[in-house]
Length: 128
Image 1 (cartoon, rainbow, N blue to C red):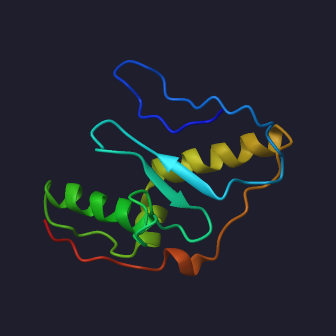
Image 2 (image 1 turned 90 degrees about the vertical axis):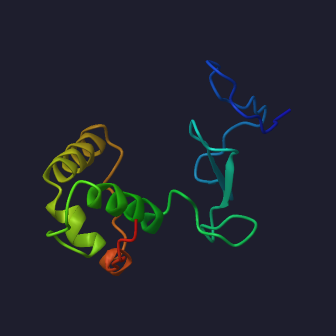
């Protein structure tokens, strides 16, 4: 039997699912939880939203908003404002991404499928 369980202190989080994995068939939901979160977040994989219709706390916009808040605490924002521009200017990120893509190809896992650039063409105002 499979059950949703909250990780305990020092205990690994896993669910004992007796169903065999079906390659090529992705689940219709995803679950995330990190230390400090009051509960797990269950997201509909088709819509990217939770059961209340809210976007995931791990969506691009939410992560970019957190990054803007934390970086503005270190000083004024002089750099790029679009999410895409921030990603392109992050040299360590770009290097790690290229290494990952090469590793996928080397392992015979195929090429990374890129989403349309329009998905990264958004900006947010930084409010502490």
